[in-house]
Amino acid sequence: MRLVLLGPPGAGKGTQSARLKEKYHVPQLSTGDMLRAAVKAATPAGLEAKAIMDKGALVPDETVVGIIADCIAAPDAKAGFILDGFPRTVRQAEALAKMLAAKNLDLDAVIELKVDEAALLARIAKRVNDTLACGGTVRADDTPEAFKTRLAAYNAETAPVAAFYAKKSVLKTVDGMALVDAVTEAIDQVLDGAVRTVRLG
Ligand code: ADP
Image (cartoon, rainbow, N blue to C red; front, side):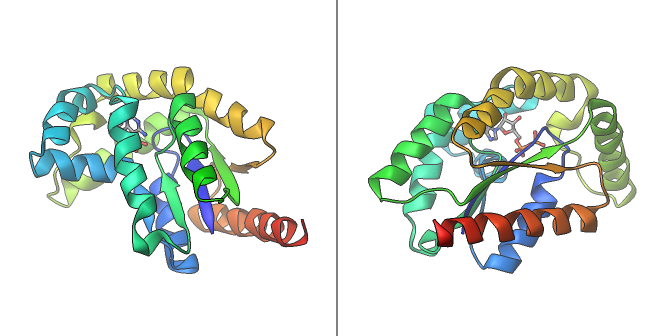
């Protein structure tokens, strides 16, 4: 199963990807998590990315494409993967298409989680409060200003990625406003259809 999850920050990509990973036994490749790990480990890529991420802007395509190319080539991704947070620009989507074509592979589906912007702001505020209540550390880009920048980056750079996949007829849209379990169910239904189509086709 090779999947991409698309959606604005706070749409629930991480939550749904983690569930899909359990169901399909394929790795969840989250560029956000990988970049945060690189920042923590103070690798050259992490040091370069930190200020950009803190602002809520996108790190350069080359950086994330390099990271994802390594992950896709790794043995644990042989049976597939769930991409969470990548591709975020049309250039990244094109780079992914090239990587897969070189291995004679294709995506089974691209799932877009649709959520309205007012709900996103409320979700992020809740995530911050819940984290603080548990004594956790809040992400540097979960401030209102950085969140605005992340949303603007999504609308400018990532919304066209959905159009890119719609043109290729692999885009499936799911209502991300529903309860978490209902979203999972909707994704399951979409994937049942997608996998059957691929097998028949
Ligand atoms: P969210 O989806 O909640 O905004 P992520 O954890 O996916 O959060 O990403 C956090 C940050 O990491 C982004 O705002 C961006 O700076 C960086 N990032 C993650 N993935 C990419 C990507 N594919 N291209 C560019 N920057 C990325």
